[in-house]
Figure (cartoon, rainbow, N blue to C red):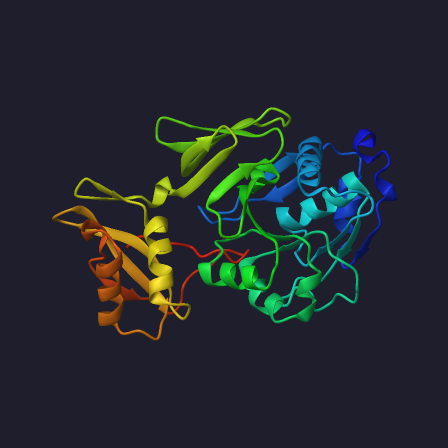
Length: 327
């Protein structure tokens, strides 16, 4: 691995987890990583270090990360997001401070300088917004789950430049980013997009060994380097011939049901329609009548859930993503 390690030891990395640094700078050409498990059982995969370097280089170009930059990472290197922050530091020579993963992402940070890039998962954002040091974050990178409209609005009001990522372990973290409040993802340098015959996103990355990744994400192609995400094809509900994209309906319902309602839409078998939509409610201060009336006001007639089901014990992946269940 000498070709990848040349000059990388100049990067200054401090904090809790330097074990991955040694692993990455070892002679092996690959590292072991695990998928998140949000669409099935987590899988162990081998990533080429050369691919990780290519991905990190593209991210550094996008954000203008150089030797003068300062990075902070409150995520574990057990996951690809944490691993890639280390690689970005090694590639650019930027200073990186690794913090212990915590619901309050800056709780272990004693710095007073500007943070050029801070990666977080959605569950860390509430605490970050309550921390006065949030004003020192130049770029906030959100991954690992959906960013709610409520949190997006709070971040915008706080003046935090927020980027939402799209990617996967297989692509060495993100291949596209969108600004908070915008629904269009833009490609990292060197990445292009198209649709397959199902309408799913195809990612072309000529600078990486994977070259092309065919996803199960429904996408509207805006241009060769931009797309709108519509949801997982696995989650599409075919109800009497009507295709319901639950993620799109959830985005419509979220501001109507309010910030105290956590929910998702899934399907169950129907003798009449084949499948029918139902709404799974995790937390709410609304009555079932209020919820179904909100659905009737907001959604197309054929999209209105046929039932409300309360689930006080939802399942999550090890990285905190909600696991949707079909009934």
